[in-house]
Image (cartoon, rainbow, N blue to C red; front, side):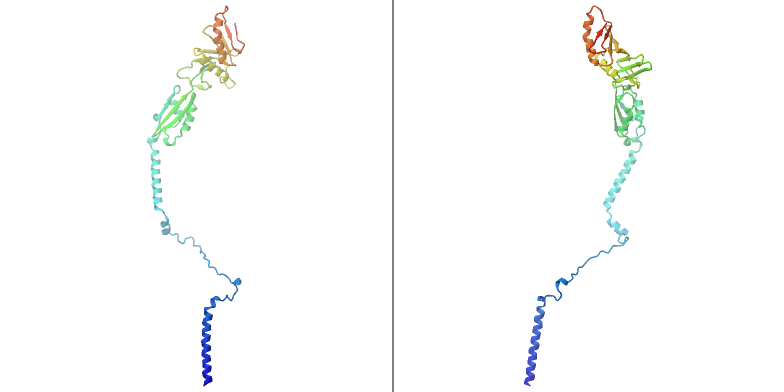
Amino acid sequence: MAERQSSKTSSRRTSKGGGHQAAERATQTWRQPPKTPRAKMVRKETRTVRVPRSRGAGRGWGTWLRRVNWLQVAVFVGLASVMGVLIWGIMQEPFRISGSSIEVIGNHRLEAWEVVRAADIEGANAFTILPSDVAKRVAGLEGVNEVTVRVRLPNRLIVELKEFLPLVAWQTPEGTRWLSEDGALIPISGDPPGLTLIDPMGEAADENGNLRPSLLAGLAVVAQMRPELREIYYGKLEGLYFRSPEGWTVYLGEEGRMARKLAILEGMKQTISTGNTPAQVLDLRFEGFTTFK
């Protein structure tokens, strides 16, 4: 009996001791290292993969209508309507240019109808006219120096001209031509030039049939310094020459400083008038070698 009790007592102690040790081991498991080495552990990662949607999925009329900005659509439609009305309005009759709505200013030798015909804009809409193109066409008329074109709504067009002033009327066997200081042809209309060049043989022309530039420059100086002179002649040997009020024939030639020659002529008036023998010809063709006889 004593042995049985002692065995029971020892078994109870063993069971109590074992339970206590198991509890202690359970509380200390977090302190023990893992059985698998850390170098061989595999880290698990979670990845999110986006599955592509089919082409027609989620794009129905309902989705499309929800995405539309109806305010922007309304603004766009309103602007388009206004633009359409404006385009329709400006193409109507009140904006069309007619011959009576074209005003020509500054024309003294050209007729207004010539300018209107050259402009070539009758029936055009005022909004489609390019003033630079109209000015270019009008500038092609003879005697036109500058052109300014302005458009005034609804259908008014203003063409302002600056014409060349005629310098000389050049008389040749082929006829008479009016020329400006730069040789441009001037329409024979209105007041005639103050100076006439009489070229009986047509020898003052260049190879193109135009008056030689040197003669044109000389004529401009003569017209400025001798405005009372109305006629001047040209000869192949004499160059430009004229008959002075004193009764002398003055040869000016073609080359050299024309202003200097006319100044010499003015200074020699007194000398020639007081001489014993009146001069008939005063030769100024060669500057520095003035002769009279």
